[in-house]
Length: 98
Image (cartoon, rainbow, N blue to C red; front, side, top):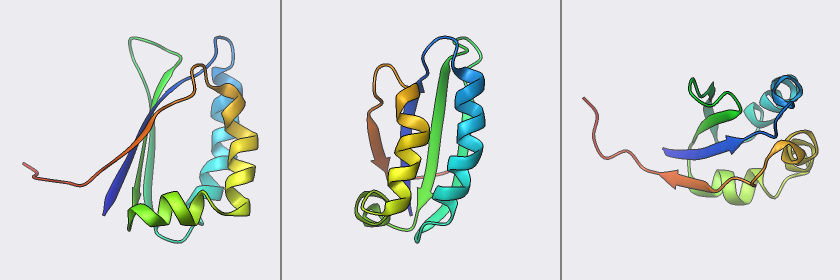
């Protein structure tokens, strides 16, 4: 399992539109091969900042499969205009749990 991590800074005044668009985008990504689970959380201290965590079966399911798909183009159309700056996306493998 690979965990995708992205901090999303949404442009001021666009949080409601972003959340509405994300409800549609969530259905798109959840249908992708290798998708396991997604959480989108809003920062308590900074209302326009969100944390996106997506679990994938493999790194390639995200970077090649989803990002190389026509569905990703729709994801981009819905969400990418909301960010400033554009987020850095990183991937993690679990080391330990408690």
